[in-house]
Image 1: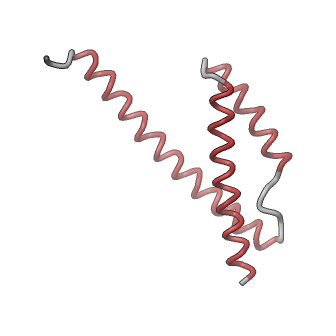
Image 2: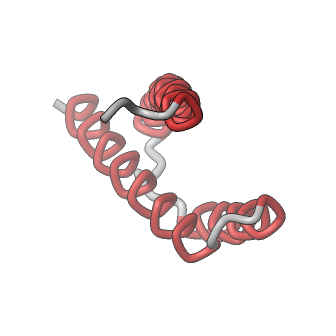
Image 3: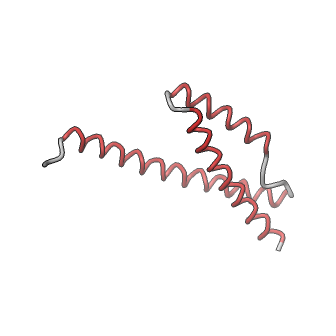
Amino acid sequence: MTTPPELLRLRQSIDNIDAALIHLLAERFRCTQQVGVLKAELGLPPADKAREERQVARLRTLAENAGLDPVFAEKFLNFVIAEVIHHHERIAESESS
């Protein structure tokens, strides 16, 4: 059975979006690495709960406005935040060595 052209077109769109997401995440992590270095230099803690709460609320609103499940969006952001904090902790440890 051959794959219908419409399915091929949709899959190509999905592949392009996935590639864009990876590039955006890479850029985001480049920025957060710089934040981690600044925090370490200034002696600030790796996590900022107040900012995280604001970001989660903001992302939930963006998700709702975009027609995306806000619970999924929050889970995704929490995963990203946890990874960023882990990076910041490693940066702080290396700065203090």
